[in-house]
Image (cartoon, rainbow, N blue to C red):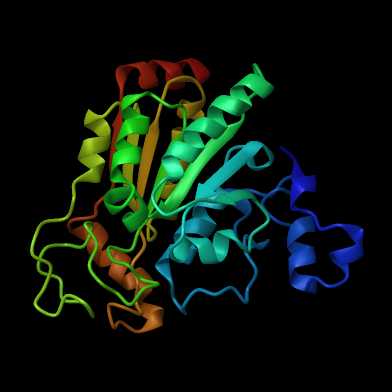
Length: 280
């Protein structure tokens, strides 16, 4: 795993837009770039396919900037809004069928462990709430039950954004949306609590309005997954388009949620705590 797999063949390089070529040379992989230098380099191309003010795009950018070892990280995705930026970023990325991303990530992690024994090769699932909590819930939970050493990151916009704004299992109860005109009928699925009960040694719940806590959570999750077991980070990434909110108010929505039901939470198992203490 290295930057060469993200570079085009020389015969096709001239046809790529200049911005993407610059991203390859000065993106998350470049030496010295990281979360601390966020804003001095690009994580994705500017003309990506996300809506203006998209919380998912912001969550993905922050998560990618926080990767502890970008060159040795493989991100596994699934169809949905998250695909739009991940497919246009200079990262090791593979898209899967909707919902089976944790199964694919499990096999990939095992293969990398055999092919690169003793080396840290991080496998990170980075998808939306529909892929993890709804369609992919069974494979998500079973990867945790098995103790797969992968990190699962949910960019939670609390709805199905790219298919018209219908409710998802992560939508809050009572929320009115395009395809839920009378409001969501049941509570938000407690995936964060389920992760703690299903074998994850580290879990965190954070909003995009708290970037430092987000970056710290992503780093901890990936480092712990290398040695201890599965980890989970849930990021609140509001969708202004389908919630009918002006695009410039995305962070305002996130801050309001952070003060209420989406405040920062973190869980660390005793084994995980000992591991981090030993690293200090």
